[in-house]
Length: 419
Image (cartoon, rainbow, N blue to C red; front, side, top):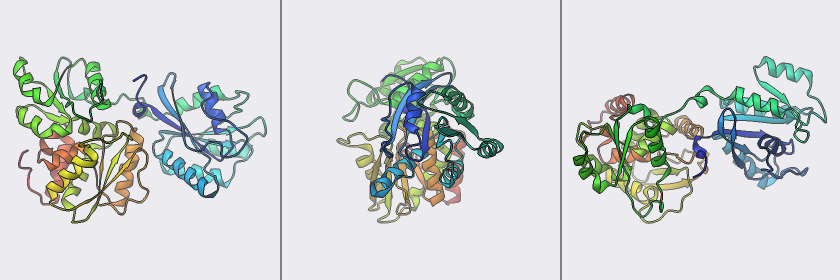
């Protein structure tokens, strides 16, 4: 894999009417012919993504979208995809013709503000008509950065880059840790990595790679083993590890082979914290207890891999849920960015670790579930809960563990048997 994963890149989305020059701006910003440029409205159909380095910020992902004033049945589909892109956008560029700001731009501005997205207003085609002074004054009084540009002439592109850097949210500049904040220099961490039919040939999956890299950055030691090798590996080290991290599918065996005093969790639970909101998803796990016969459960994956054999999302998690609840459940699957707009048919959402998505998209989905009153959890939390070992798996995260215990007490549920 070359460069930073997409999920770790700042996502910058370009939004506006058709034919306002979004694609030309993207080409000017990236200094490449990334998007097709044409005077014909609606040239851009699906969102076009361009990863690049934006110094001094680092890796970003630009998303060029179709015009949100598109027409007809096909236009409605394009608009829906554009609005989906808003859910994974960390920083928005609202692009308008400099001399043609109107009610449409005001509505788009309100929608972006309603999502609490950092925003830069781009008044493009300023070589054709200048923006109204009253508009510039009003945007400035609202604290909004506004940059005048002419993409074909390259005018204002440098100022736009500076405005982008200034608008980047502070949390995007902070280095989030997968696991490095849980260990100290010189600590040993054992990573349990099963090699089965779904393991990619000749390589590790992204969460495993990112965990190893984060441990290297923390100056900690990584010992990578398969699940059947864990007991032997632990018998050969001179001191017990600081932490054991396992693939969630091997939770039960790894929990049995890991000494009780050694903290244990899974890659999926690490990513519930890294990419989302661990405490909220821990509380959502108790939605399993409220399931009734025939309830619909949504299993969502951020990637679009081809499922084979005992697929975790399509086979194993539905099986574990049905075994735990003893209920016939209707399990529905979605992949990629195809998260449903209407969540009312579902009683529970079980999400993957979102290693192929970004944190903004994951948090957007969590907020939408909360607004709809639908509990949301993730793969690792669901597996650990159904096996009765979630309290142990939350041991490295005291706040999330206490939230879980409080939620169980509030629901009058007993302590986990295997905790």
